[in-house]
Image (cartoon, rainbow, N blue to C red; front, top):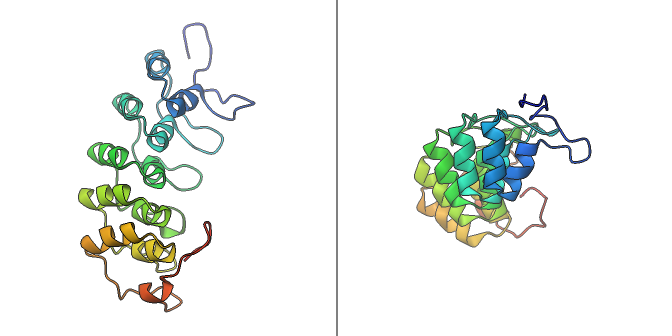
Length: 197
């Protein structure tokens, strides 16, 4: 609680978010610093379980991300979608955020919803720099999700040629098959956004 009794971690009724989340998303360093110094919980989450750390990672605000980490944020805290700040950075294509989260101890092999890793997310979204940062940090290139899809399946299925090359350079196995028995070669057809390869 702040000195005047205000709940610094309260969820705004209209925004559905905490003040720290909104400030982090917007990259407002002074506001983030003020909130943290006043006692805001660095792990406080909005209605969807999203934190300031995840917001900073998604928006690519490196200084804000560092401030929240320095305040003791849990780097592998899962939101309601079973994703961490690392997933947010990977989905947004921020390789620098991926590297910073890895340096802070983020688990690059952690599996979220449907058994996907942050590398699956980066590959499916077509973000070569994030995929490369994940591989450089030690992510498992041939990790399989609940449907036995590897990151290479995701990249090839969505037609992300640059990511496919990054994954192949990182040792991805072309012969892996999904639970439906389809290989990467068979799935290498561009797909509409939002559908599984």
